[in-house]
Image (cartoon, rainbow, N blue to C red; front, side):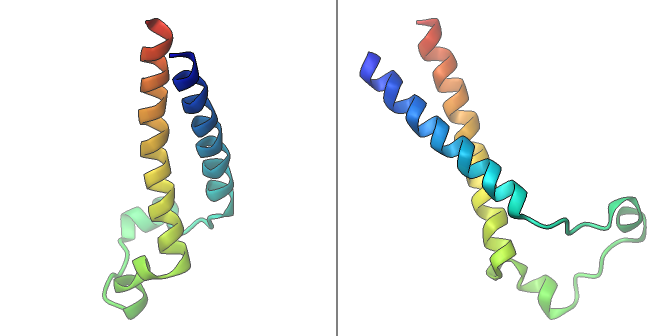
Length: 82
């Protein structure tokens, strides 16, 4: 059980570092409060294909790493209780 705990901690640390790096590299893309009130136009070519750009891929990877982070956090919490 101790080996499994150490492996999960190493993976957890790698995910944490990768998540911090990805979050700091991303640019702010929303318009803030004015973008929320006025709405954004999704009819242009860039908005429709945003997921295929570098920024779109970074956003997807960030979401995936965040989910992995949460799962590992819960897993480590369960392991340390046992």
